[in-house]
Length: 468
Image (cartoon, rainbow, N blue to C red; front, top):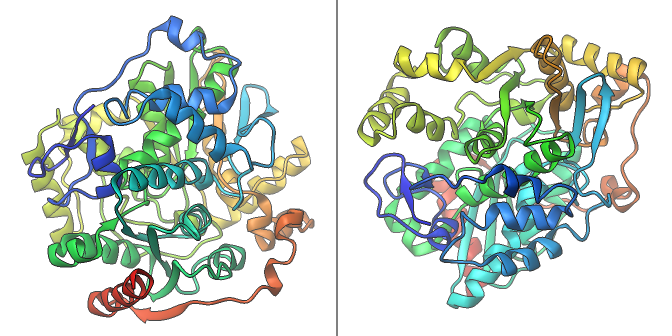
């Protein structure tokens, strides 16, 4: 399997090359040259199989020529062995035709663990084979950072620097990052928004001399391997509900578009997903795009669902490339204008194509609290604010008179957002026992302005100290 950039100027790579590169040199994102397609019989053969087997089977086509399915199975078994539920990603019914896909049973209580635990082992395996060392830089709106830190802590050939927006994550999210005192981990709080953090990471990758010097790599969802590792859980849930002989819909609370893109990839591989529903908070650029082709950047506003406080959804570029018939020149020009003007001029033909499959909705903070309260009262189901947004979006777009079930991506444990859950229900969810002492652990992080030079200096100092 070979990979091409959405902007057409970077050299094609194999899976290992894409894993280590993260962002393409031309500023684009990598996608497979062609999409693997499973037959109905191949999908049926995965029904009832343990989660690591499903993960290995579905990631194998993307890693073809680099890693075999047997190796992927060994890595997946190790990645998911420590999850807090025997099913890894259990499916819970909360209403007729409405199901919660719980993706928060990993070590940091968020869906990012589903991919990141696999990525940690993929990096270790590939770097050991090559005898190389990398520096991972990442931006987080809350959950990616802690998942990456947990997956890559204490790994000998990997240094990690994670940027988070100062004061714009929940306390649990921040502490899960800043209390990991491993020598290869550096946390940096940026005076700005998540979009500022994301821009800094992209700028570091676009600074070619710095990128080469530090041997930069990425674990944000700009890294294709992250998307590939998220595809299996949608298949796992759909198969449990009767796929491929029964179609499903999927609802995803999303900001950076990576999680819902993984569901789109599963559909592209032949899984019968008939509708993709996007739930947004007040930072609603994706919902505005679907409603009126309005992909206009506005200021990022803090909300009760901070992991979705995003206005520039990086992974949308991958879908845009597909909507434009894989035209890299058109993709490059639209992304250039988006950066320059703050508005993405998506052609109406491409927009209409998107709206045939994707549906979006927006929920306010008050609506989010109301949805948490409703789920608790009607179904005895405790949801965090992000999952509540996905549930409300699903109810608003439940396919009529079809019997199609909707799978909602439950992206975080309610204990990660105890203040919001307590406001809605009167019940303060406790942290699992393994994190019970989180609030008393020592924190360690620096604070920097959103200035590229200052951040690059901090990353350079961190990586050089560890490599010495």
